[in-house]
Length: 238
Image 1 (cartoon, rainbow, N blue to C red):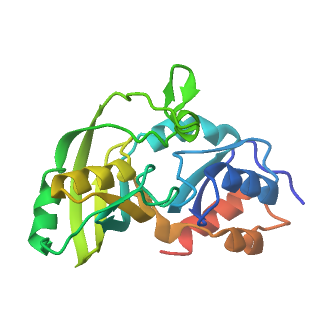
Image 2 (cartoon, rainbow, N blue to C red; image 1 turned 90 degrees about the vertical axis):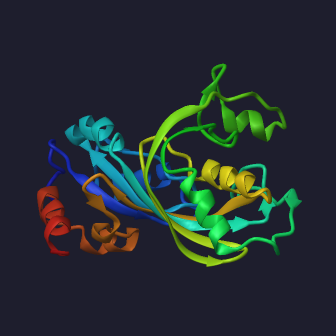
């Protein structure tokens, strides 16, 4: 078996549900026998979709890739909240939603298009006082996180069957879709949380071109170089 190229590759992976981003990096690194690997943008364990893995010298491109705009699809559950704003924690409050119509939801979405200020969730990897926010939250403590200025390019309601609503969003780096769920719920006055999320694009890279773990295990060319693997991914969906 040839050794992996020192130049490395940019590999598009479809992250499985409940895997951490680090789990995928570790698995990919083992499959392709890379000496060095990292990912360009974390996905939460309960999210699926595009995770970009860079190996060897290509790890130098991670910052550039993760700065690109992102596209996601997913589902909000309207009428109930959770402490983590997603399914990581149990529901803590529920609200009646019989009075809500699809138009109410569409109008709420419009309030979060363009430049917005967003407060990140406590259940996140943001550091505050030298500690990860999620570790503070899991201890039952709370700190005030600073809001961030973000840009939401597109925020589309694709299905409305209350209490569930599906969406597609194109947004800037650093956008927390879980926080958007919280904010949409607060705007509607009934609470909401994120029940599913899939990242479909990062800049010019698309989920439709990504490998699953099983694909990678099957396609890894044991007797060829990693450049061949990269070429396969770039051409097989054209």
